[in-house]
Amino acid sequence: MKDRTLKIIVFIIFFAAATVFAARFAGANILKFYIESSIGNCQKIPILCLFPQEEITLQVSIDKDYIATLIPYESNRLNVFLPKGFTITQETSKKIFYEKKKKPSNNEAIYLFRQEPFFFINLFPEVKKFSINNNYDFIKRTLHARLTEIKTLNDAFFVIMKSIFIPDLGSQENTKMAEFNINGKKGFLNYNLSKLGNYFDCNIIDDKGNFFKIYIKDKSATLSLSNVLTITSTLSDRL
Image 1 (tube, helix red, strand yellow):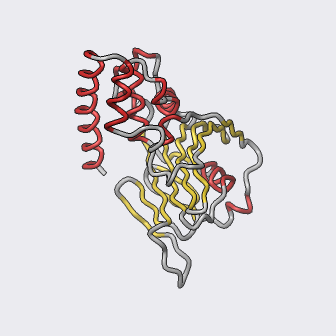
Image 2 (cartoon, rainbow, N blue to C red):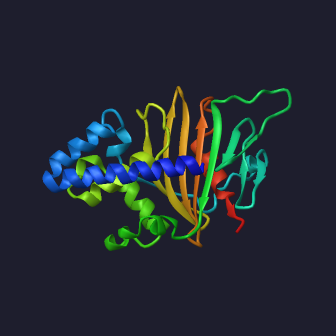
Image 3 (tube, helix red, strand yellow):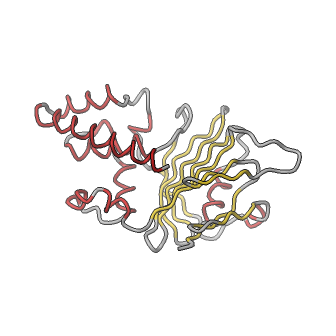
């Protein structure tokens, strides 16, 4: 994970340097063209032109019966209840949850990630100039970034971050982006429900400002949107 994070940071630095050059010597249209040719356009990566339009509130209707079917996952950084049959990866550790006599599929995976308050602000302190002061502000600005609305270098930076930050969502033909509020946790959910499998990218900020990501690759399409929101409601901080 450290090597992957380093590669991402190096990529951002070199890409940002090239983008600064393009922005200084060209206009917004050239800047958009530069990003399209380097990352992709809205046809190739539809998520680059989407933004959270749904609002999901789940304050009371937690599916307790469904929680009873889940397995508690504990680490020194977080607690959460997760479904069986998935390979669980938290940063550098991996664990397989499976039912007896059932071989887990490599297509069923859950990735967990946690960072402390102000993580993104400390990583990119320059964003404070744009009234971005915490993890929630950073994630919101990133997920609202759209390739079609690039006018400044700041806009370009967040489109680049969006392309890096959002994991594989399949074909993206049915991808939706939503904002949610679940039992004191707020955040953003990117999801794709299709015949080829379901994908869920949950970005959560708790009341302390901690950031969590729960990414679920459900190729068998066994999980519903309600299931995933219920899983998210069980998340708690250990630090």
